[in-house]
Length: 436
Image (cartoon, rainbow, N blue to C red; front, top):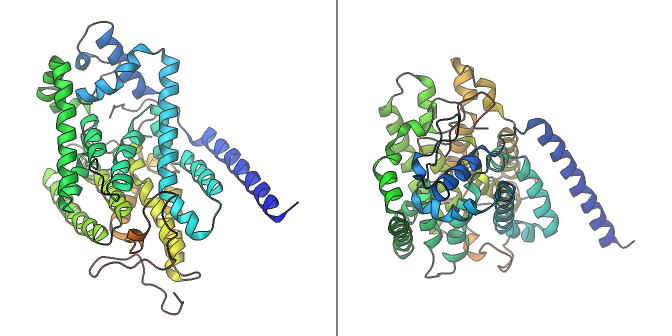
């Protein structure tokens, strides 16, 4: 057997072994939520279309949870009302898997080409690891839309914006019209002075919202005047699945969480994000801009359930990218690889749930907010890649030269380069449930 064939055979064996190991891990670690959120969407749409009720009046039987997204999201999901339940599950899972595979390929392909890795093997390993990632498995098990929104944003930032397309911003606008939190990417475009893309995204969001208002005036009136402001639909801020800065503050004093403390933390976090995002765009590193903005969105949102942390996937992949680009054997490479491995290990471990019932004390403060600390660390320490401008994401770009990532002056680095070396379950059974 030729050397290439032997290598391929071993890679196939490796992928199969990893897939079996991940399946065994999921059989023990993954919590089955029975597509709870998808059931809420499906029930609300069925009530709206077939029973002629108002979509925001629907509550899943036996719960207080109903449809919480803007009317444009209802328009996008409308075909679900005409599908049988098993087909709705199939479409939800398949859509999440397909867009996840495409996004991971966009981010990993330049790494594989630069490192000389077999591209199909790299993608297969990454998809197996993604399946074990707690936010990803929660997204799938709840039937959530997180990966679809991340994909829409990534189309703009990784494909259209670097190419100078006049359509850059449309994906971000549509994502913001489906769910409000991705609107932070409109702010990202503004603070990094991409005016045309920013106004395109705003126009897309407003256009989609007005379209929904024209088609569903009653539902739109209900959402924007009542449902949006009903905080009782969100859930308990101190619940351990809320891995945002607001959750940290709420767990310090669940009865009377300090809004002032939260706002101070948010302002400091946003200030750092603006500085780092501008530095990334200054060297053409749009993928790091995406990663930093995903991390800050998770931090400053009042509610960031564990499944929302799929927005950290780009940052974790870029840590690997930076580690591969660092000089072989350097302290920088070891530090970046260790950071990526530790963050990933914690984000598959369900560690925060150990403090679900009692998050008091020092151990409770540190442990119950583990995923918040990871988001903060990624925001502060994720390196900016000066080679990114020469290598747009995707299979068509040139192979980037290896080398250590260098930050612009004044921007923090993970570690100094080695001078001596040459050149992101929300619920358990019986726990409060929310849909979002």
